[in-house]
Image (tube, rainbow, N blue to C red; front, side, top):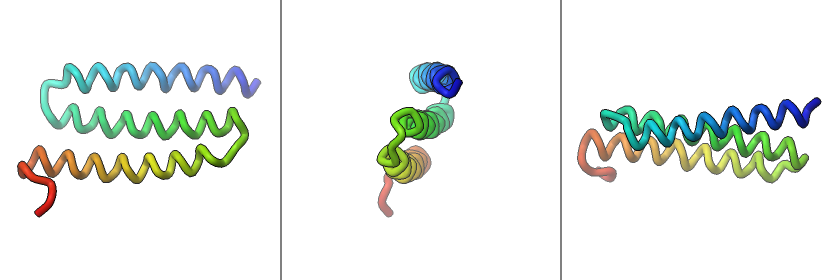
Length: 89
């Protein structure tokens, strides 16, 4: 039963990643692209967690934490770049 649930979850998050890519390419404003990038990071974190459950190892949980930290910093940096034109003050 867990295998079917994991397969369904992988399919849903994979579809969500495709929608995020579409929004990044076709987003009318920079804010749409920033939000799609942030949502893509969240979906990648979810996929890493699901893969860790599937494999039964804790290594992917640590990788998910690293992706979360890098995703947060990249979202803040991209937002500052769009608003101010530079990242470092």
